[in-house]
Image (cartoon, rainbow, N blue to C red):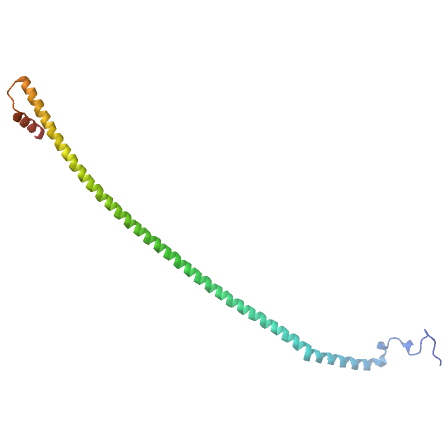
Amino acid sequence: MAEPAHGGESGAEAIGMPQLDFTTFPSQIFWLLVALTALYFILTRLALPRIVGAIEERHDAIEDDLDRAAEFRRRAEQAEAAYDKALAEAKARAQEIANQTRAEAKADLDKAIAKADAEIAARTAESEKRIGEIRDGAMASVEAVAAETARAIVDSFIPGETTDADARAAVSARLNG
């Protein structure tokens, strides 16, 4: 038989798609199994171990990072605790210094007050002494004036009868007694 020219169909081509030809199924299934087996061995022997290795490395790196982060957190907590302790000690020391300074200032103030009190007491004693002297001088002057006044009064009523000594004795007896 002669073959048809371009565009004509032969007898084998008229059957349809070769993949759907049941006569080629055993061959297709064989090659499918060979391809799947090869793909399985390529994946399990080459690709998957590399992927698993990469995943494990990544997991280990993440674990290491988490461990370092935990270590840094622990160090930060220790540093914070040390800072808090140092701050508490500094506050206590500052309070101690403030109390000591207050005590020294109070001692200085008490010393100054005691000195001022002693000075005031000395001045008061001196002033009282001067006031006493002035009072004694005033009393002597009052007695002298009173004696002269009494003598002048008595001389105005009875001239020549009174002496200075009598007038002083009479005024002194009256003032003291």
